Image (cartoon, rainbow, N blue to C red; front, side, top):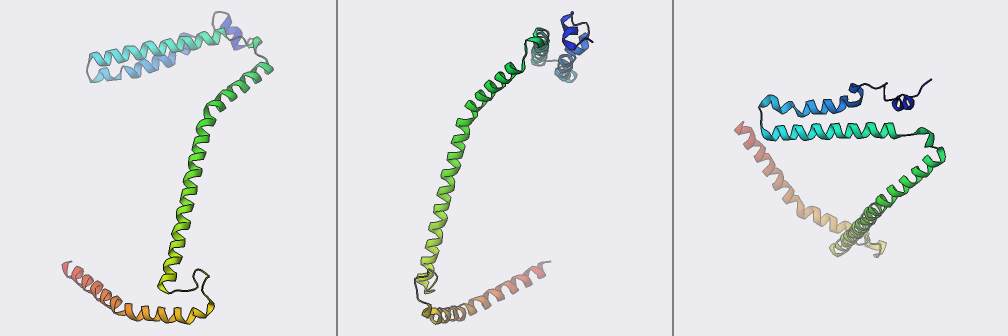
Length: 179
């Protein structure tokens, strides 16, 4: 039984030109598509650069495959390389992640403080308006005063509500007449 490595090591007889460089050829053909719209030097230079780079990277990839010796790879070595790669990744990612977490923490704390301040100012406004007991500081005996204050507000606002209802009705009539 021969492995792919042994086949590649024996002059790469198992891989044809198409298998080695087919992807690079496909990229080059895609880079040539602007020529159907007309020739320009910019299109030609970009086609040339894409072709050279894609074949160069395909050649480099093939050279790495041929140079790879699976007998030198051991599970311990692969594990060490994996740990080193993980450490490098974490060293790069963790500082950024820490800054994001600190930013989110400070923004959340600021928002909670604003919310608490807003609610406390609402309670103060209710207390100043005469709705005692909202903050818990007033005695329960002020309930009658609160109910009478709400009744007064209802009586004062009733004419405003009726005027607004008339305005809405006349607006509906005007819209109906325009249709």
